[in-house]
Image 1 (cartoon, rainbow, N blue to C red):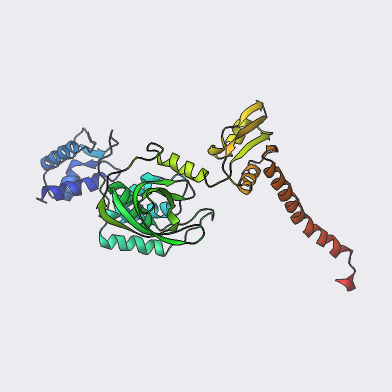
Image 2: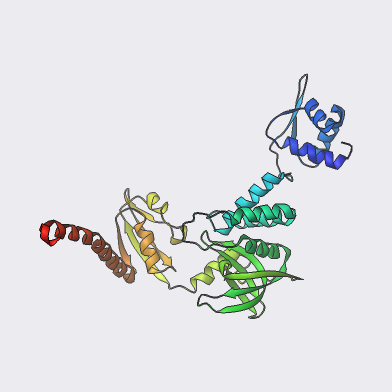
Length: 337
């Protein structure tokens, strides 16, 4: 192989396999001399690939972890596997899959050959994911278009469906994508409304990057998109003062509650108290408190105590009805059944 760039890519592909390669074997596979292999190894090192050499009669080479992340070379199967995995994670807003994952997916799909993009789409279309059902599913292509426009500072056009079902056309200057763990949101400057807006990505339809560049504006919160989203969402929910006693250690309770509710303060070795201001619905708060799996007493808000009382009575009735029917069946005579 006399083409140096092609030979370097082939050599790199071999070295990315987790094993040690004798220099003579590399030379035989690439059809060059051991001296050429040594020169090619030096070229890879100059490009930032940390190739380690071992001494000995034969000598060998292997790729090790370095201080920086050099470009990776993927074969077809590896590229398809990574793209499918990123699509599945991003499309279902799995907690922990954040902006970096979407950027990686956008970069990978940009350079995938058409034949591999087709394989990725075919695999995803033939797969049915088992999700928790408490978050909206998203077409990963929508995420990659939005992420590409954010990175390239390109204006976007898309259709948007509001919470009441109203369909509108929007043109925006995208700022950031934000994941809450259950949903994705786009923070952008809406040109038609001349103001900042947040858009649920699962309600975005047919996004199109126009190619028109723009100079990024400054967010009202000073550049923190997550903070802006939090403030925007808080304005749409009632403000509640939460005050709850738990009969469990503070660490136990904190591990089972969302962090935005605040940190409980220990009131004893096996008790704690949670106070704070929240912007969540009573129904959601009731379920979250019940999932802590310990005894608790609600002092505030009053509406939450009323809701828990009604919920407890409803659950008790749900358990009592089968028992009552069973007792009625046992008391009935043979001719009455």
